Length: 236
Ligand SMILES: C[S@@+](CC[C@H](N)C(=O)[O-])C[C@H]1O[C@@H](n2cnc3c(N)ncnc32)[C@H](O)[C@@H]1O
Figure 1: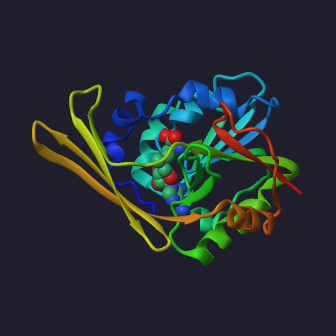
Figure 2: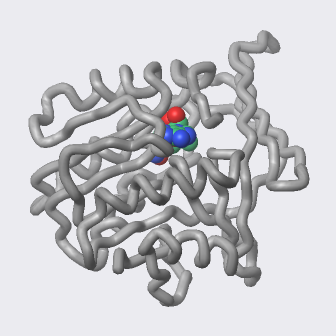
């Protein structure tokens, strides 16, 4: 489930070739309030945390990820930053030593997809329904009352191929299945396949996702999605 070992050595090259815009992600994260204690679930190679650590007011940052090879890159990237800690954990068994004001996931364990004017739907790297319950149950323990959970918004997934900044060719292919979709990621260099990774994602329609989140204390904060990179939930 959600293991990124195959992609880890190439992840940064793929993501910083226009897949995500890390400065805008952090601007959006901090748009409403100056948070002090921040937790990222599914922090990967630490690209968001590196940008976040530069910002004022953020005094402590924790990044959690399931894939050790992604975290090893994050460890190197963030080694000079005393306010950042990292932990190799699966969110479904999360154990931390404190609570946070802001918890977020962007392309990490959970995110929303908005396709045109349709309602958002939740995408989870965790294919099993009970394990998703466990994940939110554990996460909820580490968010302060009145604290914020932000889950990233992405556009729809589709099949495509493109040349990235290092000249390699990235491609992705989506297969729909009963409970979500299966996404295949590939990287090739001059026709030689370098990387293949497959992730099975579970999806929830908007009503089911709100019910799931609410049952673990996260209440949806309704606002226009226009120009936003996150949906906002308040810990009640
Ligand atoms: C697409 S990457 C996103 C990384 C980072 N947020 C970024 O924006 O670059 C998804 C990450 O979620 C992690 N992940 C998936 N399932 C997880 C789980 N159950 N617990 C913790 N991390 C998980 C993967 O290991 C991977 O590093």
